[in-house]
Image 1 (tube, helix red, strand yellow):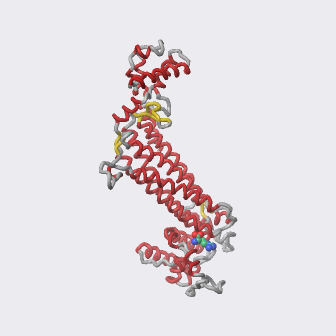
Image 2: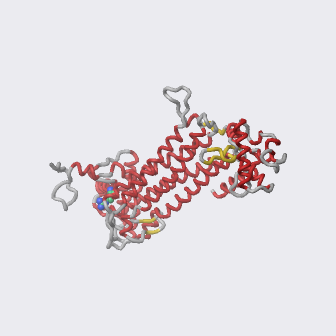
Image 3: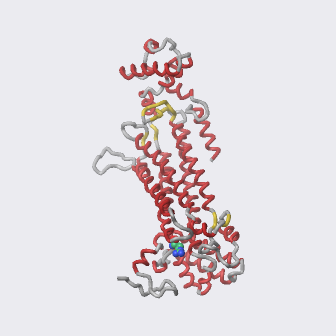
Length: 461
Ligand code: ARG
């Protein structure tokens, strides 16, 4: 049986009131009130433009701005009463405006629809969030650069297949993280270009018959330009999908950093000491110090990629122009922005306090035959074909494994047993220091190259 709400009819068009459950079901005010500041900012610009074009009087514009300014203060102080009877943030604010200033409040919606209004609010909101996210991303990049600078010549094993591959410097590893984040920063900046376009003026879908000036509104709100097609303006959520895709990639990067920090802080690797303030203990095992922050960040990468899927599916097959489906865009977007800001912030706070256990990193590189490639390259330089060198070094590694020694710990006679080309200078190449120093081309792991990469990165920031 339909449960009729007799307090309010949705509009003169309706003979029956909205079903009470439907009223709750269709309301978005519980979550879209987060955009109140943007809604007010957009309305002030709209009213200013209407007065500029002679559609409202200056008195009406001033009354509207005064009323909206008061509402803004009421919201800030917590005095504002949000009501699901007014469905969403837009109608709550407009209803209160009419309470406060009367007839001029009812004129604010001239030449506008909630369809272009909501699209404008989201874009304003996202512009703000993208700037916050970029600021945290930059903080993290600086923290990584500082740490890389301390460790430009700290030797550690580099891995492929999570097996020791070749020696690298910790600074070089950190600069790989930096590169990933630099691309993220570029993608965010690029996404902002498509966010910063004004939909207002599209009205419901077809534009408006009032002589509005969309360039004026764009200028007042700091948008780069008005959107080019009214249908597209009210129905486009590409920018939201794009933002969440960029955000997903950021979270995937953070999940990879997290995985490494978690592995490195384990007793088995023991490469780093995580700051106590970013770890917790176990309620039962007294010895535990768990890397909670990286674990949680790794876990949160799932929700952001989930939000991306939600938004893609939200838009799939939607006909032009606005559909109520679009009300579902906000929660995944807000959640994505919150998650990104929090995770980047936690990382930017944590990285400066990471302590590298240099000796453990060094010894681990030494135990893993990390300079085997250097021995092969040495033989090639002395005239051996690479595949033969690969074979000879493979045999030398086997001797090392069998006798529990690194290549640099085999005797010259033992090494000469694998190739007569080997002479005493081989030990210059079998050391970890010699191995990293040799990789000094651009992009290589040599300490001097890493230093230069850090300097270049600092200049570009
Ligand atoms: N709350 C709505 C949303 O978030 C606002 C736009 C409503 N427009 C409409 N024609 N019902 O999308």
